[in-house]
Length: 309
Image (tube, rainbow, N blue to C red):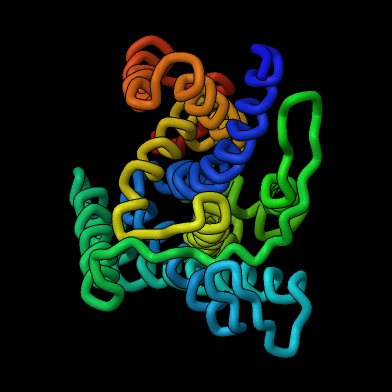
């Protein structure tokens, strides 16, 4: 494989990883844009999503590469898997906000953020208790279709990941920009008290933000399983930190910034692993997090934060 082919192959891999990080970063940025809260439970909502996706696929008879579909073609099964995973994780995110974070809304200081860390560990340990500590093989239902671009290889799973990510990110962008609820979310992010006086149901808007963030994390969890063909209770921490770095890099609270940051982090990880060493990818990415926080705290596209003045 020539250098150009290797570069193209890593670009394909990086875009696939970046799509997953972008979906997860959107959850951080939606919540931060409204509440100025880093939701660390988001790490393991993503992890739970991968197990929910695994359960749905296995419910249709898809185990490993053995496919015994029950009543639906493969496309239908994948649609059900994504929809079911996103609804479950969206509901989980909204439930976390309603039951555990809303009572702390008026509490000053780090208590809400620390609470999200505790919630994350609860999810982490619940999965260990119910699913065990071993990694789970993730079904690989996609047919072995691939295309060759020079010496690089583009597989059907990468195309699926890109299509799903583009549809979800495009849908979220449309929702935030053109729907009544999306406009209410932007108004709440800008000035929650003024939005409340204008008749916006701020509590509902915040619940919608948590639901959408959880749904994006669920889609990302299913994508992780389809891409790597395994899942584990451990996947949330590192992947979540990469996604958080993506959100910070793009400008936390900024929806387009989360998408851009996710793609860039995916490309950086793929290129670092290929051209330097796999062990150095983490060092480079977390160094980027530190450098951005020190020298460009608003990120590439600017931070969007609530106006608390």
